Length: 394
Image 1 (cartoon, rainbow, N blue to C red):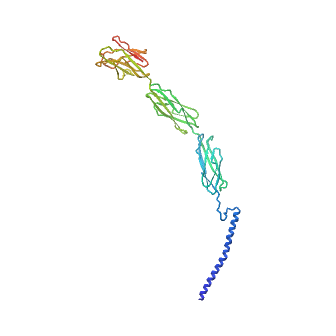
Image 2: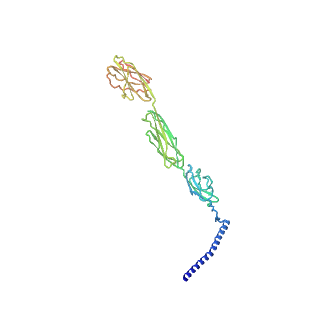
Image 3: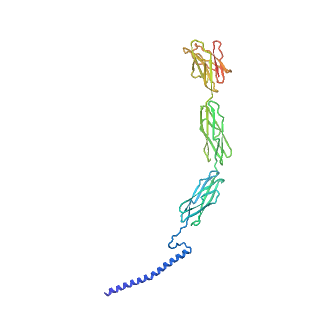
């Protein structure tokens, strides 16, 4: 009983000691917390960034740009390079009010100012290469935003202007030839090649048509004009329109290749006619006459049976072509006489004497002298027979 009372007394003594300790510590912690609160208030009043109790901290704007650099490339004397874009965003808080400026006359910005909270502002950046020689140029775009955590940012711009290239210049841009079928070839024409760019233009020309030929196939030029003679050959070409390109190439030229279209128009030949007349054969069994036409002696085509007519007109004769004519007579038994023969004469119409006898068996017409639509011809009369007379008219 006494042992139990002693143990209980010891435990009560320990509890009392613990309570006394807690009572002593708690006032000390409370005083420390109050001191810290007073320190925060004083710091805020003095401009410290420490946020006052019960208020949210204000976040300033921050400038962010993309890309961090821009590169342009253009050719001296050529067109301006394509525009590029510069994106401006606010990665902080509040509102970002920005302005943009540059340091080069050849550089352009649009727009040059703006405001943004969370959206992206786009600035179009352009360059003007007019008057700039081949070189590398640099400039700086400066972004200014008062109140931002990074109030000034810069974007570098590089412009490379390459040397101007040679350029093919051709004159004329097309060629037209006109000729008559079977006639003389048209007059040659000239194709001029120049360098309308810079540097040296080394050119070559080619064609694919058999009727087209060029006096030169290649050459070089800086400021002078190279002349090429263009010739067409109409031999064997019939009435039609023919086209073929002349190709011009030049390694390193800004506009290679180029083409010059050649058109050749072959017109129909001028035609004329010849009128043949002859005296009738008086024999009773005469059945008719046959007319032979050819372009060479003894080279006649199929005859034309004109019946008992004593005149015949031949149409569509080509001007300048020599023709050969011959007339025969045939009887009711189909016996054909020898052909008439002609010799040149200077008259515009001429008597042609033929001796067309039914007693002459058929054989190819005898050679005849040439008859041209622009001339007329006659045959010497044979005194041993009664002639039948024919007139050949132009």
